[in-house]
View 1 (tube, each protein chain N blue to C red):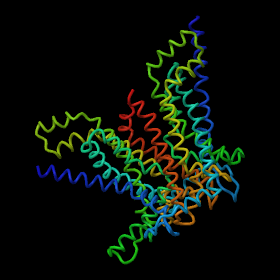
View 2: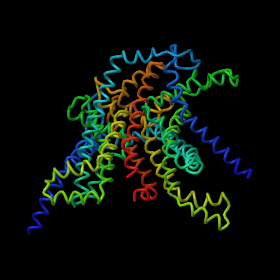
View 3: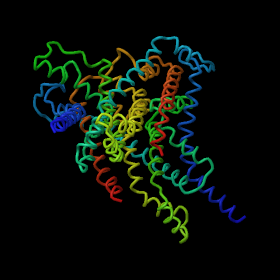
View 4: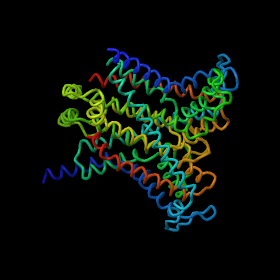
Length: 287
Length: 263
């Protein structure tokens, strides 16, 4: 009996510690999400919201080509960025883990992430300085006489991809590096002793063992890339709109809140699907 | 022999090329913040500190900077306190559905900032709450609380548990154990969580953009500067932000991470 009352008192105290954080999360994360989901079922009459409780907005998304195209543009950009970033980051992580003396490895990683401590908005702007019509690349190429007319680099999808890749190469280098240094060197030695050549060791031993690092990084890349408004807006311009740009457009000029909410829910469904697809590898990291 | 030397050269070439790619925009940004001219693009006309002077003379930028600091420090403090208490409660007591609670607390980490911002905006509109720096700070606590909770929760080991039990046996009240025993022992991870939150909040754009009205934070003010196109003054602001963040990173690296790494 005595221990039971002690336990309830202990429990009550424990709830006192946890409740504030739980309440905050429910009040400012769960409830807003429910409100937004409800608004996606409403329609707009002039500037008024009318709760219609139907799926018209979702049907409209699949019927209106410019909305659906936004999703495809976003997906194409995101897959391109993820692929290029993995291909560029893997050798970099490998070189840092294998070729750089141990005591300098930490320094090398800090150097690799240093440029990302400027503001995210400023970083995209910096790429504009490099890619603009009168920017660094065009200026250099014209100076050495490779081109006569400036290339159209900014306000293209390539500019968006370059800006994203710049950010995610850093991220993937970190996750892949973490995996590479965890791998016991004996595995590779054993494979080599059993007669595998360099490529076979890499393909059958190293790559499968670093797959979790690649997948974690790739998943983060996917989630952050598909939900980002800044980079496509600054570097990609208005020629073709990514999904977050379309969402912001609904909020601004069109003041169509229900459609913005609908598109956000669709964005979230896509991210959840990506999570389900990667879950197998993500769990291994969590331990 | 030859192939190993060749692969060595190749690796160094690759390393230099990628670091070049990583540093290119930052170097261009900082270099042309000193541009003696009206366009931050080549050719470089010579060095001047004029643009930095203009930044510090710009009252809107300076007040945005103050707002950013206020929001960052305020929201990170709240996130750290809430996160620490929750971590303490969940790590030290047996609570029902603790897995679910932990899941709920870290859930906002998996959702795009844009969606969190939109949800809050819909709710504030619906309730008739007017937008201000307060609403921005609420949003920043939502994104930083999972981070603070996860970092502090991860560092609460059994080793500290025994010391806490000893303090309790010696007659310390629960709040005394928490503030005088647990908090000092966990200070490295609490500080790490705090500084990470500060940098995230300091740099956050979309929540600040959607949830503020008249008073804005620095990234939002920089965003509105971008409308005037390429401008050395924007380079100067960007360079200052870069410098502040690198200073924060260095403090973090030298004081906290190094100390925990030694332990």
